[in-house]
Each structure stands twice: as structure tokens, then as C-alpha cells.
Length: 282
Image (cartoon, rainbow, N blue to C red; front, side, top):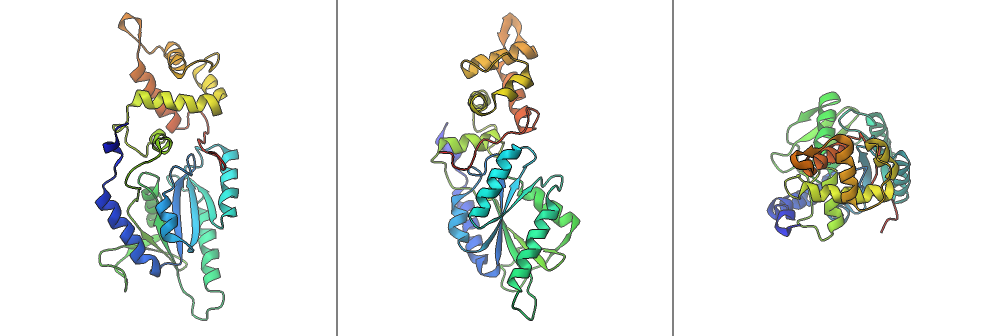
């Protein structure tokens, strides 16, 4: 895994960090979007450091692809941390009603002792490709209209003005400048948050098979009609090639086609509902 490919435009990320810091005084809550299948790996530690004591809504996006028991465990975990977790699918709008319920409750809390009602102002944060745009498009399309500049906001920034006095400020996706942890880079690659061109797809698929062997062996067996998941990950890939007919001339296995199929079927939920991280994992 070449380090130069895992650096994410430090200049851009520095600007995003500064943007968040500049606007913290304008907000009373943060909406952090995570991928429900990898809530730790899709979480940027810098965001915790920046947001600190602000009220927090944690959206577990793509929760329809995550293991239902794991979703429950993560909801419990984030509640214990004082956040308001919401399971969602931002593409379909599943969980949107729950999100509005939480935001309205937060708005009532900040206005508990106020004569003049203030809007809930929340900043949307998250790493790239975690579903932030889908959420914003859904909010902007269904329940809002984008508004112009507001006093005290750096020129050019857009707020999304929702009904019921809720205002959301978008921020660019922020990712730490480089990955120190190979496991985090792998998991982000599994779910497609890192482009496939960055890492070799066949190597990546071998690593995914390792995870599935340990945590979801029955899903591999059922999806690909193989007898077991015993052996090396490459052996399993070859069994899948046999079952799916991914054989090239000279009876050679078509590893590239197998890798593409396995990765696409994992990401699309065709294997079943899979979560790659649980609270308390080391």
C-alpha cells in the first residue's frame, strides 16, 4: 500500500478544519455522518477534537446494509457517549423522520428557558464519500430551501434552512491527511470510501474474504454455494471462480472478475447485512 496514495490533499483538509473552527461559535449542535458498517474507521478523530462539548447527532448511514444486531450495539454505544444516534439510509430517506424528531427535541432543549425562540443551528460533518451529499440533497430537496449568506458567516457559505427553525451548515468532507492504521484504510476501501484505483482490487478482495471468514462465514457459503470457508482466502476465491464459471482460456482462474464481483456484491448488500466493526473491537 503506497503511502503517497493515502495522503488526502493536506491543503484542502487544513481549510476544512479552519472552516469548522471558524463556524463553531455559530452552531449549537453537530451532525456527524458515519458509515454504519465501519463506525470507527469512518470517524475522523479530528472532528471529536474540534467539536468537543457541542450537542451531537451521530447518523449511522447505510444502516440498511449493516448487521441489525451491530446497528443496535452501535446505537447503545453512542448513546452512552452522550450523542443522539440515528440509523439512516440517506439515499432512500429511511430514518429521516427519526432525524427530524431528534433535531426538534434539541431545538426545544436550547429554548427551554428562552422567551424568544432560537433556531437549532447544526453543522454537518463527515469524511468524504460517507453519504453526506445524499443526506444534504434529500434535506434540501424535500424539506428546505438553500438560503444566502447570514451575518457572521464567511461570505459564500450556504446554510440549508429547514422548516421548524432548523438550520444546517454544510462543510466539505474532512479526512485526516494520512492513515497511520492499515486496518482503517482497508475498511474504508472495502466500503468504497477510498477509490478502487488507490489499492489493488484483487489484494483488497483477499483481505475482505479474511474478514468474512472470521465474522460472516455462513454468508459466504450461502451466497457462493461453496461447501466451507476453510483454507486460505485465495482458496475461497478460487472456489467462487469454479462456482460462478470465472475461468479463462487454459483453465486459468479469472481473479479480476471474481474480485470485482465479490466487492460489488458486498457493497450492494447482496451477500447479506454485514458490519465490519463492533464496539469494543481492538
